[in-house]
Image (cartoon, rainbow over all chains, first blue to last red):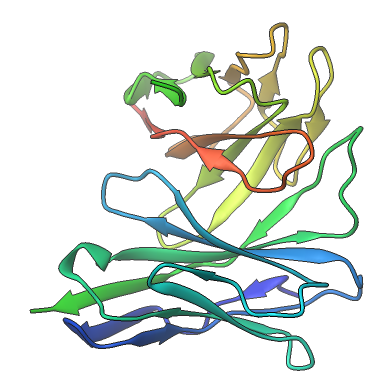
Length: 119
Length: 112
C-alpha cells in the first residue's frame, strides 16, 4: 500500500485565489510527521510546512497552511492568494514512527501535484 | 552562504562505468540522505547516514554505494550494477533533533 497518496496530478488556479492540494497518508504508527515540499522547474526541493501527529493545531507558514484531519488521515496543503511564482510541483511526505536518533528515519514521498497559476 | 551543494549538475555515464555524485553541506547537519527521482514520480530513498562512518540502506540501495568519512560530505557512487541509472538525484540533510530535510539542487544523470 502507498504510504502517501496525492490524487491530483495537475491543478490550475487563478492568480490571487486560494487552492487546496490533497494528500492522504497510511500508517498505523501513532507518531509521525507530515511535510510539504515545493519543487520548481529548477529541481530543488523547497521545504514549506510541517505538521506533527501530536500537534493540536494546524500548521501555518505565511500563505501556506496544512489542513490536518487525523481521523481521515489527510494532510491537505492550502495556498492562499496564489502567485505566479507558486507554479511548481508539490510533494507531500511523511516520516513514520518515533524519531530514531541513532539510525535516523525514512521519509516517504507522494507522486506530486503540478500546480499552474493562471494570470 | 550556508547550504547544500551537489556536483556536477549534469553527469553522463557510459555502459559499465562507475560514477560518483558529490554532496557537500556546510550547515553542520548530522544526517544526510540520497534520493532518486524518476519522471512523474516522487522521491525514493537510496541511502541515509545519521553519523560519520555509519549509513543505512533505503528502499532502492541495489547498484549504489556511499561513504561518510566526513560530516560535511556524503558522496554517492552509481555502480555498473545499477542497470537503469538515468534519473534526477537529490541529496538532503537534517539537523539532530529536528526532522525537516533540506535539499540540494540535484544532479541529473544520463546514460550514453
